[in-house]
Length: 180
Image (tube, rainbow, N blue to C red; front, side, top):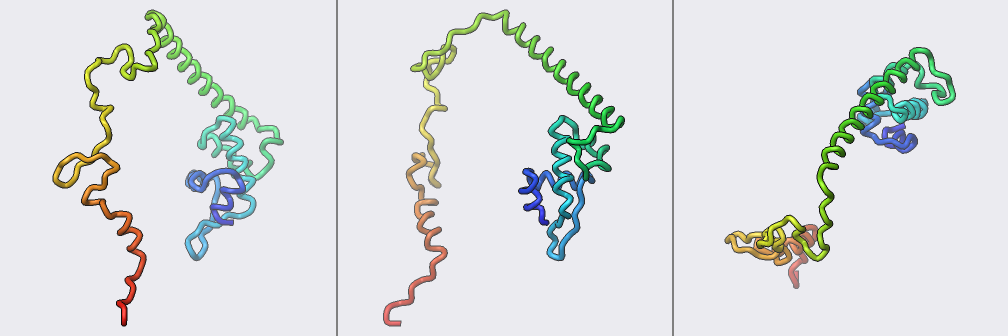
């Protein structure tokens, strides 16, 4: 089967499949036209890769399971090596979560020292802390014509005045002259 069909049948993308192939987790052969062709058992293999990735393992972790990817991974008890890899990954994830939780707590403590500012009035586009001077970022969109005079975006400039007409007529042959 070609890469698009494998992607469709496994709920993944062709790009992910190429990535798995580059990592050595799946393989294909090239047809005479250069397309990748996968065996039918690649569906189970990709499903197992996605199962392990979904459980939180990395592609490097999944590579350690390469010999098991063709079987029923969700229904088979893991080996001692598989459990070790999963426990190591869990420890890494827990450390990351702890570090993020500490960072969140520090930020929340820093913000708690300051009172909550009042919400801006919905009719005030500048907000409570913005200056009341003219803000040019709210000016209408403009483009410049070749002679550098501003025109609103919806007004055709000389360089694009007939762009739709040119695009429409580009595909049509000219009609023969009358009396031909």
